[in-house]
Amino acid sequence: NGTYSFTTPAADVTVSATFALQPVSVNYLDENGVQHTVDALPLLGGDATTLAAGSYVVNSDISYTGTVCLVGSGDVKLILADDHTMNVGTSENRIEYGIKTYNNDQTLTIYGQSTGNHMGILSIYTSHYCIYPLALTINGGHVIANADGNYATALRTTYQTITINGGTVEATATGTGA
Image (cartoon, rainbow, N blue to C red; front, side, top):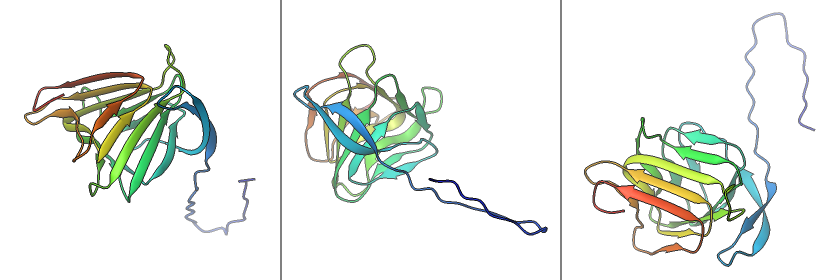
């Protein structure tokens, strides 16, 4: 049940624990607007993180102050739950890279849960690349990609395509492209 108790000696004691995230069942809309259910790991935010192939859900408001790196091989599925926001960098504190591939072998697919005013939000502010996977598909959610720098690019892939099937996208860049 996740509750543990223990008795400590009278001297100073250091205790550390590692908690494994448990998948949660979450609904999302596919590229045709059809609802599906999948078990996804919730994201927690923090400094920087790595995401291997699999499904992840933003089911609370979270922020990253470092790069979200896609690792391994395969598709990372990011589900933006209604009424929640995932921030990667801020307009005041931009990071160099937002979400990027580690070895050019990871794709990113972004999903939402609805199409109205309650869509989940992915907000990325960088000085270089906002989203840079092998291939990018946006099927839903509200994606804000804002890159401000000499070679800034909001949405870019290594050698594949960018496909937008749904949701809303605001991509702005002062450098080589939107």
